[in-house]
Amino acid sequence: MLDQRVGLAEVRAAAARIQGAVLRTPTVEVDAVSRVAGARVFLKLDNLQATGAFKERGAANRIALLTARERAAGVIAMSAGNHAQAVARHASLAGIAATIVMPRFTPSTKVVRTEGWGARVVLHGETLAEAAAHAHAMALNEGLTFIHPYDDPGVIAGQGTLALELLEDAPAVEAVVFPVGGGGMLAGCAGAIRELRPEVQVFGVEVEGYPAMAQRLAGRPVSVGGPTIAEGIAVRDVGELPYAQLRRLGIEVLVVPERAVEQAIALLAEGAKQVAEGAGAAGLAAMLAHPARFTGRCVGTVICGGNIDARILANVLLRNLLRDGRILRLHLDIPDRPGVLADIAMRVAAAGGNVIEVSHQRLFAAPSVQSAELELMVEVRDTVQGDAIVAALEAGAYVVRRG
Image 1 (cartoon, rainbow, N blue to C red):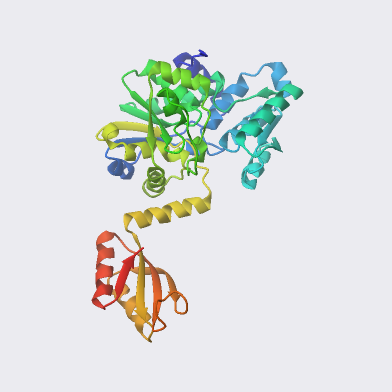
Image 2: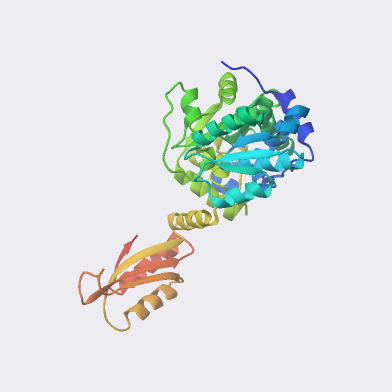
């Protein structure tokens, strides 16, 4: 078993090394989030980093540790996400050439952003594993230093610096929870916290489709896959160094469903006015999905990334409004005669609803040529007002189905 432990000394050294190169992000207590979570919640806002994610900490520290020869030769990394931009940015700031290998499926916006930091981007392979193999081959052939996103003690120590800031800004925390992909952030943070504040309980969190670290720690075969909104922590092969550290420290990794992650994204947007990607919201999702662990306690977590596609964010917010009953989706079979639509609109308006979308099918969807099918999307304050709207429509002899 590998044993390159990262503890408080290594994390403190990393903090001094990257000071000024990485933003010291604020930690805030948000009452609206705390009320929903049932705990006193402190949010570490690493979504405010220049590249929108915590990965800058590890990249900055690892690059600062390069020898003169390594600096002259350049660095290489494999990533389809935040690690790519982090390495590109901090290599550029240090005047070091950077090559980033990305799978061919990588969205063009991420390629453009990475190139915008001055990196050479190489698109290779259909999977992350194929891109990683190509990056290692290029590193060997061109004499480049490979910067791993999480299985590197320098990167792990850099990621752990956020825990020092969190504990300094929120000394009252009794428990902390960190998202887990490859495990670098959790390993670095746990290593520092166990020495600095051993009474603070440390948790990791993964999504149901990718519980690789939880499975490894439990001694079970790794079985992952499927779509997830938390693609930043959708990892099959966790880091061996983080795994060894978390196993040694006895860290528990919680698993949360997709719905909890979506709920957390929406809560952060509405309650904290913070944009979080799926991975960035996973810590809060753990509090929502496992209330017995956190209710009534003072809990800290990190919004570790804010790079979410605008369309996905919009869909998450709308889905959450539907789940909360603040948007009604109604289906009605109505008689095909003049004045019916106006009557329905008046009944909805009288009950205080706001119709935001209408679909009226007369020719093909209705069960009879004497009828039509109507679908309404109605904005309401809460479920009580929604029930009142349905009652008002049913009072007009309309058959209403909620969709």
